Length: 339
Ligand code: TYM
Image (cartoon, rainbow, N blue to C red; front, side, top):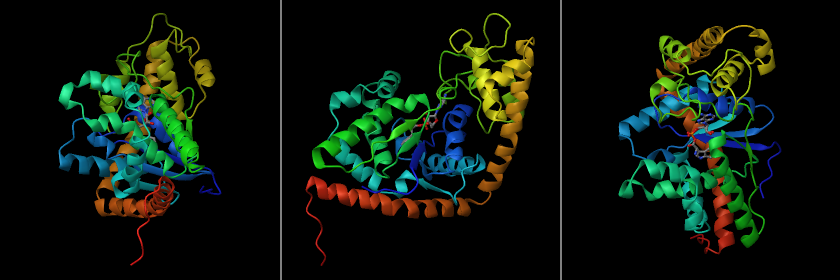
């Protein structure tokens, strides 16, 4: 089993829209950035996964992938410390995925919550086989690097559970091969809620008014925050069950200003929702505006983005190849002879 000196961290994000949203940042990317310290980190764009719903126009996918890299870098992912790469640049992911597909029950895959939800939105033949096997590819993404921690939001917990099950299943059948990884999910920021519907998670598939996109212009961000649905009463208190809208705004404010929630509760003691919304709007704009500017600067040099990706894949590929060789050997494939 590969045993890196530092604990290994792996995570991925899909380039499925032109901008990540604040849920992606607070739930995942902020932890990606923090975990660059004291860990060996691998972060990739799940461009293969991005084909599982309605495959985008090829040009759009290319553009979104480069745009996604720029957003990761602008958010603080440092390509010197992190291997930043595209899933499609490391063929081992799909090679390993096949092995796990053969170890996953059909029923097991079809019981995944995200599959069922997406299935409910599509219909019949428009639901691809790739959507069913999506979490199996995700397991391969993680296990191929022998990752110890997977920083993700709550919606990915079940996929990491499946990953653990598959690692244990393979290890049980073929001998100790894979590190069994842990999801790294931060309690307060694991599920940022939609601003218009605080019972749902913030998501690119919900109407735009409830989603704070990192690349939205400042006026749009401020407007969305000011129109956020809040709760009955007027007290500003962190109470996710009783006051989901207000608590969500507190979590956002806490994340973008690095201020603990109790300190914010104390600051807003005796003030109304209007004051909280103004503060959140200002803080979100102060966070997103420079990030957005940096993204545009980075995108002015797409060749440099491609070089970052090439260097990242170069770091990832040897590890992925070694895992695939070991797995092929263990399952009994005849090794190719030297000729
Ligand atoms: P994706 O692209 O949907 O989301 C990227 C990350 O953002 C988190 N997230 C949220 N966190 C808090 N609140 C929200 N409202 C919110 N919305 C999204 C997600 O939990 C995720 O961490 N299947 C993955 C991509 C993937 C992956 C992997 C992740 C492919 N292979 C291997 C980890 C390891 C996905 O679709 O994430």
